[in-house]
Amino acid sequence: MVDISDVAARLDADEKLKLTYRFPVSNADGRVDYETREGRLLDISQDANLLYVAHSDAVIWVRLEEAISVSPDL
Image (tube, rainbow, N blue to C red):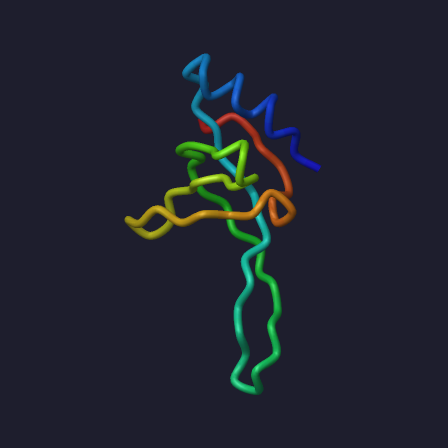
């Protein structure tokens, strides 16, 4: 599990981070599967337990429970 307060401190220290997360994808039959994605971590909302990530030239939000890991963005 990702510690959101630790991530907040790392972002406040201007550390460049990337997030690995599970993203829900609907199938043609209406079932939801998850694929693993990775993107540059831009910001967080500790109150809402959301992480904001760059994906395909857009900003998306990821729920904390969908976050897998945070690592340096080299």
